[in-house]
Image (cartoon, rainbow, N blue to C red):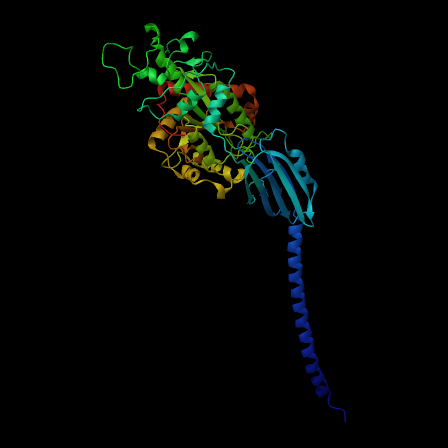
Length: 519
């Protein structure tokens, strides 16, 4: 007898559902596993297919930088070989491409640190890059996350193993200046035990520094005439002249008398302080061209880069400072960067302190979100917050330079970090305001001012606790008319002249003190 339809249908229906459900579940699990596998493979493929966006080389005396920019983060292994000095780097997850090959041609013959770069496919998915160096080095390898217009960056900073002394380099540069008149150094003699600590004067004396006769002088008090050349040799060193006893007389001699020497004519004796003043006190002005290297600064509507304009103005001002004396004391400019390379904000401060700078002038070109803003400005540090919302906005923007320029935060020395965090003294800020007001007055003589007073805000680059420091915004590069001025050699020279007049006027009213700080 044939079973009822319902019974016939019920049995097979129940029996057929269970295998189907199991198959469906199994299928879903298989799809999930396959999806996971595809995702893993895709991740590996993305890593292997990383695209190189750009390669850049930034040569400088301080250090040379190589940057590889990519759309994803690159993974590397590197080894430094001492003999001959070279850095070998394996970049994983990429294949050799035209962008990487460009590195070979981007190394300049005058690069102070890199002799050449070689690249090749070391193995599938691994590119070997070798940087041949001109001397022993301290390489730093680090990555930077995307910021501003940049994607992921792989950075190689190659520092000379033997760091040059910036103060010694400054003195050597001065002695090699063709405008300077350098005479034969006198024979070395001992200083009195109570002579003030003056490492800068020691460096000058060791290298035969003499007063300049052919420099324009900003007079505080007219210096006495220099000795005739033939009379210079028998004159002792300046410090001793100031305290030397008169020729032997019938009085008790000092414990260690100096052998009698031909006494100079009485009329020539007053010249000694002039020699000491011109020899012992080199006035150093630290000039800080903003931005540089990976950090272009603000960019005008016609493509003018802030970092290029301010470096040009700094060079013009440097030449003027190096050709000027104040009250018989020669001046010398020290640049925190003299070429197109990046310098962290804290390092700029530390550089100025290492050369015992008497002033610090940071040179920038302003920018705003609208092109209507115009005029030059001068800023000093503030202990109590910004003097205006615009000053606060600008300080925050300038303080982002380290992120864009690419600072290796793990390598910053502790004293550099302290320089950034150390709030300057009230005296430093007061002196900075004096300098700023003088500079603002000089610039206002030929250019429009954005505001008629010195503004204040928390600029990291102005935090040297012992150096009067100002930041000069030369114009708004975001304004088309002022961008054209900044590109003009006429305006650049006017700015350099005005800044020099302001600096010399400041020193005329605030003569530099005797040096007592160590290098």
